[in-house]
Length: 460
Image 1: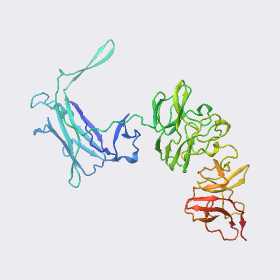
Image 2: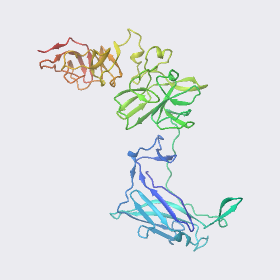
Image 3: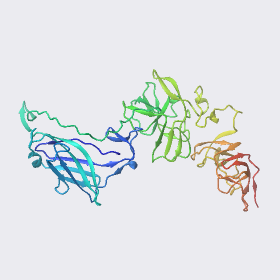
Image 4: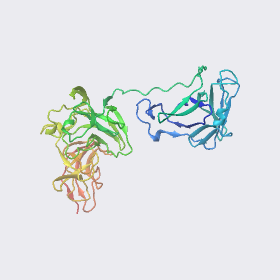
């Protein structure tokens, strides 16, 4: 945290006192929610990678308890030297035996006392002295426990001493952290339905208006997708659904490109087998980061309630009949929504290997048409088109047979040829025996090639 914690303790007379405190730092403002640290600005859980734990190795510490912060009389001193403080890694423990607390003189007038203040001083191995954890302490008068038998039952009664009113001077502490914000713009709160929902799941509203894991094979979820939840939720919880957010997860292995609704709340980069609709809900920013959401929201009557849902950005055909389209994150309608004869000449073809955005591809027969990387090393693997989005092996690739490939890099203006590095193009034609020489078009900038497939020639 960016400011020291201000903690309060109660010491019970005649009882062992033990408080275990762990000190950590986080490089931004945080708060607490349900016992965990959260980012004060976004409300998301603080990842372990952002937490730096204190290291008390080689340090000593002490705390002097006084009636008031400026009182010269020291009521009690705990230190690593007298065993009242233990330092262990990031942990600092305050310790008092029952005999020590039982010897306290309880009372409103000196030498008695009912409350005190103290601040832990930590001395580093290099001699630097730091102050940690300021805060008030209240002494509770010693009580007795009476155990009796009543009607065959054991009854335990705690009998406190006569009550006393304790008034202490207020102690200015550090300014508190800003509270955890509620759902910001780009988020909404919805009650979770009968099944738990895992973190980083894409969600939809069911017929009762409750939150469920979205599934591209469920026709009821078409047009009812709300967004993504960053955290896990149990049935009946009020879940925060993110509709404009960047999520990060170390278990992801995204390729650059759109992210779609998958199966049972999972995110996918290609429509799953049996999908009845395709909906883009974000875009992969890196292998472990995904930005939600690209589409604009519309209002729809779901489960007897007016609910915000997202327009559809891609079409799988008849399954998306009647859906309201939305422009994608480039500000255009996706090619899959165009009528036949309008737009680029494309075909959706399963990929027989993983394809990267900008790859030039060869269409071949393997129990039906498949797309693979074109390769000037092999006769018969000439380029027939290109892809603008990364596709996993087995996923559906949108192959462009004409137009501008704007997902390339390092090109030199002028003619370009298929290269011996599979899927790529360059200004120099291959020259080794057995290589395929094929002109692919004209590079119009370092990042764009106007594709026009040439006749492949195999060198002798």
